Length: 164
Image (cartoon, rainbow, N blue to C red; front, side, top):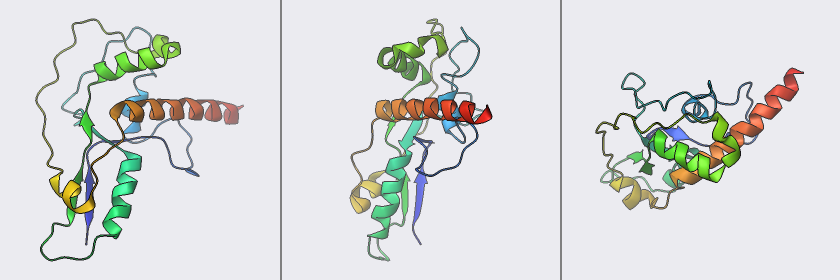
């Protein structure tokens, strides 16, 4: 048996996926960047949410599953693969979205400069994933965030249209 253990998974919804809200699961954390009251502060990494600034794109998780199917059985090699591509903070994501999608500035939290620093968090060992599966080149957090935001905006429009 082989298992894939991703960090926080973000990304566009799959083709044919049924939805009735712009975001579900961990994507709600990214959607929270563009949904909410105006002039709200940047939310920190609340330990109660257990949402550290670690991520992997859902498309990379899918790729890891396919790669794992191609690995021959072995008693000597690990069969548990950790996936995590990079780290980013909500503050970095907000700044990036504001620059890349300026039309969304009014929907983003306000960066005041008084945001609490992000506390230390785990460093995940992805060496077996790299060595055995050959998965090294992940989708960047910037591409993940923008693709996810763009997909959520599309879904917002579709959900609103279906409600009329």
